[in-house]
Length: 299
Ligand code: GLU
Image (tube, rainbow, N blue to C red):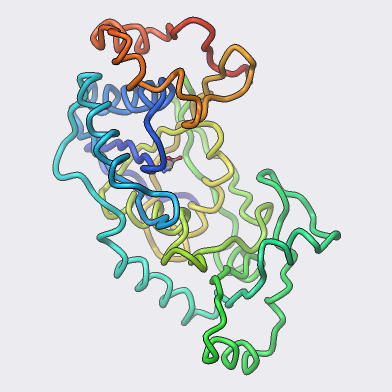
């Protein structure tokens, strides 16, 4: 099944999780997405992915907005907060559940680690499917007794239901050359769509919101390339349009490790505190020049 054609009006977005301050790599990604939309006369949107109640912090929401404004960025329309869209995620979960594609999973992290035969996918161990075969009456009983559970997708069933899938890719640096890439959702196993500790997973909320916001081009880091397999599948199951995807390299520091929010040294807020001129920084990032020691990872 080829993805439905994207509408002509380009919409891009930046979708940070408020779990720390933004670093130079986030600033670079956000600028690229904004510039891409502006160059096409389209819109650039900001979405705060704040449904992870254990790690999201309001102070980081404020920090993200401050950092982006400091870098000279502006977005179109209201900021979308995922924490205000939980009913949408619930409705989609219900839709998938009623199609028999979800099952409750009671496993703890330790249970999954302990299952030595678990195969590994691109993002670590693949869930071995322990709860997929629980008798429905047993699952219902455990839920009624208040057992903590996540909801997982039965990937084999879902992929068979959707049939062969492709997503549209643009190269990075961005050029208008679309290729069709085969989606491999089965590599990721029965991923979680509603977490024990959060009402929806990143995969579900991101896919639904990109569609609801009319996003036509998703520009994000290479670390999320695997997620695109899953998002493409969810689009097919939920009858949503499929944007084009551009995956840019992640930035690495002097030690060759990818930048992380915990590396305070390259947070935009720190550069600002050090007196860096944001207009010059933005111009450098746009030209692919990074602060000393920082560079895109080699493919
Ligand atoms: N919220 C995700 C993150 O901060 C990014 C989501 C996306 O771009 O799809 O890593």
